[in-house]
Image (cartoon, rainbow, N blue to C red; front, side):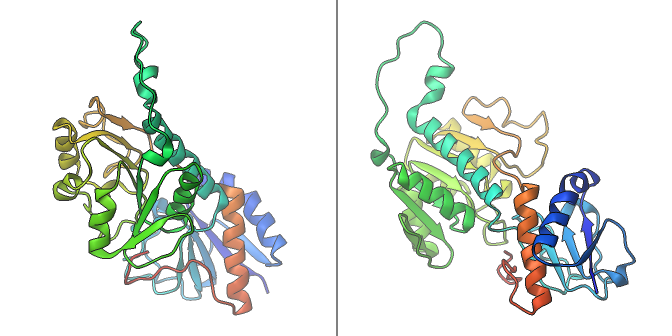
Length: 311
Protein backbone atom coordinates (compact mmCIF):
# COMPACT_ATOMS: atom_id res chain seq x y z
CA UNK A 1 0.00 0.00 0.00
CA UNK A 2 1.48 3.38 -0.95
CA UNK A 3 2.21 5.98 1.69
CA UNK A 4 0.80 9.45 1.27
CA UNK A 5 3.43 12.18 1.29
CA UNK A 6 2.11 15.72 1.53
CA UNK A 7 4.35 18.47 0.15
CA UNK A 8 3.63 21.54 2.30
CA UNK A 9 5.65 24.48 0.99
CA UNK A 10 5.26 27.47 -1.32
CA UNK A 11 3.79 26.64 -4.74
CA UNK A 12 6.99 27.55 -6.58
CA UNK A 13 8.84 25.00 -4.47
CA UNK A 14 6.50 22.25 -5.74
CA UNK A 15 7.52 22.94 -9.32
CA UNK A 16 11.13 22.59 -8.25
CA UNK A 17 10.73 19.51 -6.05
CA UNK A 18 8.07 17.36 -7.67
CA UNK A 19 10.24 15.52 -10.21
CA UNK A 20 13.29 15.06 -7.93
CA UNK A 21 11.11 13.73 -5.10
CA UNK A 22 9.30 11.27 -7.34
CA UNK A 23 12.62 10.06 -8.71
CA UNK A 24 14.27 9.77 -5.29
CA UNK A 25 11.32 7.90 -3.76
CA UNK A 26 11.27 5.46 -6.66
CA UNK A 27 15.02 4.90 -6.42
CA UNK A 28 14.63 4.10 -2.70
CA UNK A 29 11.87 1.64 -3.45
CA UNK A 30 9.20 3.70 -1.68
CA UNK A 31 5.73 3.46 -3.20
CA UNK A 32 4.19 6.84 -2.48
CA UNK A 33 1.38 9.15 -3.45
CA UNK A 34 3.14 12.51 -3.54
CA UNK A 35 0.56 15.28 -3.31
CA UNK A 36 0.07 18.94 -2.46
CA UNK A 37 -3.44 18.44 -1.10
CA UNK A 38 -4.93 15.56 0.85
CA UNK A 39 -7.42 14.81 3.56
CA UNK A 40 -5.35 15.22 6.76
CA UNK A 41 -6.31 11.83 8.13
CA UNK A 42 -4.77 10.11 5.07
CA UNK A 43 -1.31 11.71 5.30
CA UNK A 44 1.66 9.60 6.44
CA UNK A 45 4.52 12.09 5.97
CA UNK A 46 4.76 15.84 5.48
CA UNK A 47 7.63 17.41 3.53
CA UNK A 48 7.55 20.76 5.21
CA UNK A 49 8.67 24.37 4.92
CA UNK A 50 7.88 26.50 7.98
CA UNK A 51 6.61 29.32 5.76
CA UNK A 52 4.01 27.05 4.15
CA UNK A 53 1.17 28.27 6.34
CA UNK A 54 0.57 24.85 7.89
CA UNK A 55 0.85 25.28 11.64
CA UNK A 56 -1.77 22.92 13.11
CA UNK A 57 -0.76 19.28 12.89
CA UNK A 58 -3.61 17.91 15.03
CA UNK A 59 -5.83 16.86 12.08
CA UNK A 60 -3.04 14.64 10.73
CA UNK A 61 -3.95 11.64 12.84
CA UNK A 62 -1.98 9.11 10.72
CA UNK A 63 1.14 11.25 10.52
CA UNK A 64 4.43 9.42 11.13
CA UNK A 65 6.99 12.23 10.69
CA UNK A 66 7.57 15.76 9.45
CA UNK A 67 10.58 16.22 7.15
CA UNK A 68 11.80 19.81 7.23
CA UNK A 69 13.15 21.28 4.01
CA UNK A 70 15.36 23.70 5.92
CA UNK A 71 18.34 23.18 8.18
CA UNK A 72 16.81 25.60 10.68
CA UNK A 73 13.83 24.38 12.71
CA UNK A 74 13.35 27.27 15.14
CA UNK A 75 10.03 28.19 13.48
CA UNK A 76 8.49 24.75 14.02
CA UNK A 77 10.28 22.93 16.84
CA UNK A 78 8.20 24.64 19.53
CA UNK A 79 4.85 23.97 17.87
CA UNK A 80 2.76 22.19 20.56
CA UNK A 81 0.59 20.46 17.95
CA UNK A 82 3.59 18.66 16.44
CA UNK A 83 3.92 15.39 18.37
CA UNK A 84 5.60 13.18 15.76
CA UNK A 85 9.31 12.99 14.90
CA UNK A 86 10.73 16.07 13.18
CA UNK A 87 13.78 15.72 10.91
CA UNK A 88 16.10 18.56 9.87
CA UNK A 89 17.62 18.94 6.43
CA UNK A 90 21.14 17.70 7.16
CA UNK A 91 23.67 15.91 4.95
CA UNK A 92 22.27 17.57 1.85
CA UNK A 93 25.45 17.81 -0.21
CA UNK A 94 24.10 20.80 -2.15
CA UNK A 95 23.31 22.74 1.02
CA UNK A 96 26.70 21.89 2.52
CA UNK A 97 28.72 22.64 -0.60
CA UNK A 98 26.97 25.97 -1.09
CA UNK A 99 27.77 27.02 2.47
CA UNK A 100 31.39 25.90 2.18
CA UNK A 101 31.83 27.94 -0.99
CA UNK A 102 30.21 31.09 0.44
CA UNK A 103 32.07 30.95 3.76
CA UNK A 104 35.43 30.15 2.12
CA UNK A 105 34.95 32.95 -0.39
CA UNK A 106 34.24 35.59 2.22
CA UNK A 107 36.94 34.41 4.61
CA UNK A 108 39.44 34.67 1.75
CA UNK A 109 38.02 38.04 0.73
CA UNK A 110 38.69 39.48 4.18
CA UNK A 111 41.95 37.60 4.67
CA UNK A 112 43.38 38.89 1.39
CA UNK A 113 41.97 42.41 1.83
CA UNK A 114 40.28 42.21 -1.54
CA UNK A 115 37.89 45.11 -0.87
CA UNK A 116 40.86 47.43 -0.50
CA UNK A 117 41.84 46.83 -4.11
CA UNK A 118 38.46 46.16 -5.70
CA UNK A 119 36.93 49.33 -4.26
CA UNK A 120 40.12 51.38 -4.33
CA UNK A 121 40.50 51.88 -8.09
CA UNK A 122 41.51 55.52 -7.65
CA UNK A 123 45.06 55.59 -8.99
CA UNK A 124 46.76 54.96 -5.65
CA UNK A 125 49.38 52.16 -5.60
CA UNK A 126 48.53 50.38 -2.35
CA UNK A 127 51.45 48.19 -1.34
CA UNK A 128 51.65 45.50 1.28
CA UNK A 129 50.86 41.81 0.87
CA UNK A 130 48.45 40.10 3.27
CA UNK A 131 49.68 37.53 5.79
CA UNK A 132 49.57 33.89 4.82
CA UNK A 133 46.68 31.72 5.92
CA UNK A 134 48.59 30.10 8.77
CA UNK A 135 48.96 33.54 10.37
CA UNK A 136 45.21 34.29 10.31
CA UNK A 137 43.12 32.57 12.96
CA UNK A 138 39.56 31.57 12.10
CA UNK A 139 36.94 30.62 14.68
CA UNK A 140 33.68 28.90 13.79
CA UNK A 141 30.86 28.89 16.31
CA UNK A 142 28.77 25.81 15.58
CA UNK A 143 30.19 22.42 14.65
CA UNK A 144 27.19 20.78 13.05
CA UNK A 145 27.40 19.44 9.52
CA UNK A 146 27.79 22.91 7.99
CA UNK A 147 30.23 24.29 10.56
CA UNK A 148 32.43 21.20 10.46
CA UNK A 149 32.53 21.18 6.65
CA UNK A 150 33.42 24.89 6.47
CA UNK A 151 36.07 24.54 9.17
CA UNK A 152 37.73 21.59 7.47
CA UNK A 153 37.76 23.39 4.11
CA UNK A 154 39.49 26.40 5.68
CA UNK A 155 41.92 24.18 7.57
CA UNK A 156 42.92 22.55 4.28
CA UNK A 157 43.82 26.02 3.01
CA UNK A 158 46.18 26.45 5.95
CA UNK A 159 44.09 28.54 8.36
CA UNK A 160 44.36 27.63 12.04
CA UNK A 161 40.70 26.84 12.75
CA UNK A 162 39.07 26.77 16.16
CA UNK A 163 35.56 25.41 16.45
CA UNK A 164 33.14 25.83 19.34
CA UNK A 165 30.02 23.90 20.21
CA UNK A 166 27.84 23.66 23.29
CA UNK A 167 28.75 20.01 23.87
CA UNK A 168 32.20 18.51 23.19
CA UNK A 169 32.93 17.35 19.64
CA UNK A 170 35.92 16.11 17.71
CA UNK A 171 36.42 17.20 14.11
CA UNK A 172 39.59 16.37 12.25
CA UNK A 173 41.69 19.44 11.44
CA UNK A 174 39.83 21.69 13.89
CA UNK A 175 40.76 22.62 17.45
CA UNK A 176 37.42 21.90 19.11
CA UNK A 177 36.31 23.72 22.26
CA UNK A 178 33.07 23.51 24.21
CA UNK A 179 31.18 25.08 27.08
CA UNK A 180 31.32 28.64 28.48
CA UNK A 181 35.09 28.65 29.06
CA UNK A 182 35.64 27.22 25.61
CA UNK A 183 33.55 30.02 24.12
CA UNK A 184 35.68 32.66 25.77
CA UNK A 185 38.85 31.07 24.40
CA UNK A 186 37.35 30.62 20.92
CA UNK A 187 36.35 34.29 20.70
CA UNK A 188 39.74 35.50 21.97
CA UNK A 189 41.54 33.81 19.07
CA UNK A 190 39.14 34.83 16.29
CA UNK A 191 40.76 37.09 13.75
CA UNK A 192 37.84 36.04 11.57
CA UNK A 193 34.68 34.77 13.29
CA UNK A 194 32.09 32.70 11.42
CA UNK A 195 28.67 32.09 13.00
CA UNK A 196 27.00 28.80 12.07
CA UNK A 197 25.01 28.06 15.22
CA UNK A 198 21.35 27.08 15.25
CA UNK A 199 18.96 29.60 16.77
CA UNK A 200 17.81 28.44 20.20
CA UNK A 201 16.93 30.28 23.42
CA UNK A 202 20.57 29.77 24.47
CA UNK A 203 22.05 31.24 21.26
CA UNK A 204 19.60 34.12 20.73
CA UNK A 205 21.69 37.35 20.91
CA UNK A 206 24.77 35.29 21.80
CA UNK A 207 26.97 37.97 20.22
CA UNK A 208 26.05 40.88 22.44
CA UNK A 209 28.28 43.82 23.35
CA UNK A 210 30.22 41.83 25.96
CA UNK A 211 31.04 38.96 23.62
CA UNK A 212 31.84 41.23 20.69
CA UNK A 213 34.33 42.96 23.00
CA UNK A 214 36.08 39.61 23.53
CA UNK A 215 37.10 39.47 19.87
CA UNK A 216 40.59 40.74 19.01
CA UNK A 217 40.71 44.35 17.88
CA UNK A 218 40.38 44.46 14.10
CA UNK A 219 38.49 41.16 13.87
CA UNK A 220 35.99 40.43 11.10
CA UNK A 221 32.59 38.85 11.77
CA UNK A 222 30.84 36.71 9.14
CA UNK A 223 27.29 35.52 9.79
CA UNK A 224 25.61 33.03 7.44
CA UNK A 225 23.88 31.27 10.37
CA UNK A 226 20.92 33.08 11.93
CA UNK A 227 20.33 36.82 12.18
CA UNK A 228 19.20 36.73 15.80
CA UNK A 229 22.58 35.39 16.92
CA UNK A 230 23.80 39.02 16.90
CA UNK A 231 22.64 42.08 18.79
CA UNK A 232 22.35 44.55 15.92
CA UNK A 233 22.99 47.73 17.89
CA UNK A 234 26.00 46.25 19.65
CA UNK A 235 27.50 45.19 16.32
CA UNK A 236 27.16 48.68 14.89
CA UNK A 237 28.72 50.16 18.04
CA UNK A 238 31.69 47.77 17.82
CA UNK A 239 32.25 48.70 14.18
CA UNK A 240 31.91 52.43 14.84
CA UNK A 241 34.45 52.16 17.68
CA UNK A 242 36.90 50.43 15.29
CA UNK A 243 36.98 47.38 17.53
CA UNK A 244 35.74 45.30 14.61
CA UNK A 245 37.02 45.94 11.10
CA UNK A 246 34.05 44.61 9.14
CA UNK A 247 30.93 42.44 9.28
CA UNK A 248 29.60 40.42 6.37
CA UNK A 249 26.01 39.38 7.06
CA UNK A 250 23.78 37.03 5.10
CA UNK A 251 20.97 36.59 7.65
CA UNK A 252 18.94 39.08 9.64
CA UNK A 253 16.29 39.36 12.31
CA UNK A 254 13.86 40.61 9.67
CA UNK A 255 14.03 39.39 6.10
CA UNK A 256 14.07 40.89 3.57
CA UNK A 257 16.20 43.45 5.39
CA UNK A 258 14.15 46.72 5.36
CA UNK A 259 15.61 49.45 3.08
CA UNK A 260 15.81 51.83 6.04
CA UNK A 261 17.86 49.44 8.20
CA UNK A 262 21.19 50.99 9.30
CA UNK A 263 23.12 47.94 8.04
CA UNK A 264 22.59 48.96 4.41
CA UNK A 265 24.54 52.25 4.36
CA UNK A 266 27.17 51.30 6.94
CA UNK A 267 30.63 51.42 5.34
CA UNK A 268 31.88 48.47 7.39
CA UNK A 269 28.97 46.12 6.73
CA UNK A 270 28.40 43.94 3.70
CA UNK A 271 24.83 42.71 3.25
CA UNK A 272 24.09 39.64 1.16
CA UNK A 273 20.41 38.59 0.73
CA UNK A 274 20.35 35.18 2.46
CA UNK A 275 22.20 33.49 -0.38
CA UNK A 276 25.01 31.75 1.52
CA UNK A 277 23.33 28.45 0.84
CA UNK A 278 19.97 26.96 0.15
CA UNK A 279 18.41 23.55 -0.08
CA UNK A 280 18.85 22.12 -3.58
CA UNK A 281 15.94 20.00 -4.73
CA UNK A 282 17.82 16.98 -6.21
CA UNK A 283 20.07 16.39 -3.21
CA UNK A 284 17.42 17.29 -0.62
CA UNK A 285 14.97 14.89 -2.25
CA UNK A 286 17.41 12.03 -1.71
CA UNK A 287 17.71 12.89 1.99
CA UNK A 288 13.91 12.97 2.37
CA UNK A 289 13.38 9.73 0.45
CA UNK A 290 15.99 7.92 2.53
CA UNK A 291 14.28 8.97 5.76
CA UNK A 292 10.88 7.77 4.53
CA UNK A 293 12.45 4.49 3.43
CA UNK A 294 13.97 4.07 6.87
CA UNK A 295 10.74 4.86 8.68
CA UNK A 296 8.78 2.40 6.56
CA UNK A 297 11.40 -0.28 7.18
CA UNK A 298 11.31 0.29 10.93
CA UNK A 299 14.87 1.64 10.94
CA UNK A 300 15.95 4.74 12.91
CA UNK A 301 15.36 7.96 11.03
CA UNK A 302 18.23 10.35 10.37
CA UNK A 303 18.72 13.92 11.60
CA UNK A 304 15.88 13.89 14.13
CA UNK A 305 15.50 17.08 16.16
CA UNK A 306 16.11 17.02 19.88
CA UNK A 307 13.14 19.02 21.16
CA UNK A 308 14.91 20.01 24.38
CA UNK A 309 17.96 21.35 22.56
CA UNK A 310 15.87 22.92 19.80
CA UNK A 311 17.84 21.46 16.90
